Image (cartoon, rainbow, N blue to C red; front, side, top):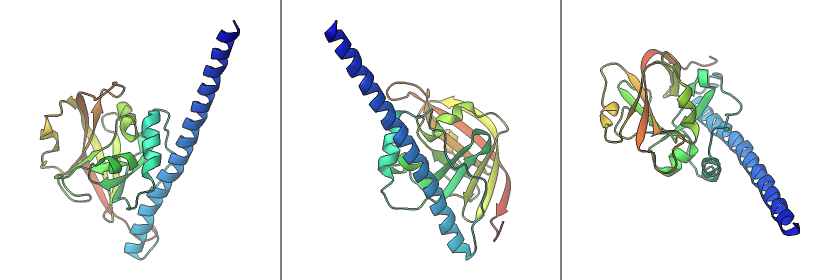
Length: 218
């Protein structure tokens, strides 16, 4: 009985320690994510020689859906230099994530990545963005048709409306092909809670509805 009690006490202590570590990583990650977005705002403000637009950005991001490994990878990536190229926002999901160039592991650990070969941020065409299914883009499981997506980049605020949500295989790269209507395509692995390498891709396609220059004091 004493041995069983010792094992129970050890397991309980370990569980508390791991929970405390996870909470600490989440709090630090929230703070650093906000700093990344602020860094983008400051860079844009300098380019305009005026204060940046202060569009609504949540002070924190809900990481309750994130895996512990993803939160730790995000925190570990934050010592790397390099300002984001833009900020992606989905108001209905309370999501605000910095967008970096490329889809290397560092970029995807820090935020969303611009998929090479797709239209450049703030330009017409089909802009492809990717992020991890157990991190920033896990919340895409709750997105709906007609939801608004915003992309703040290149001195413009681009607003899109979700027109299609689909699940494809990794070989179905046609989803990233140029489109006649300016669009944004969000890509993440699927299923969201699959153990191991997820076999499919979750695709959210939205079409441009408005492009507004970022003006001083706006």
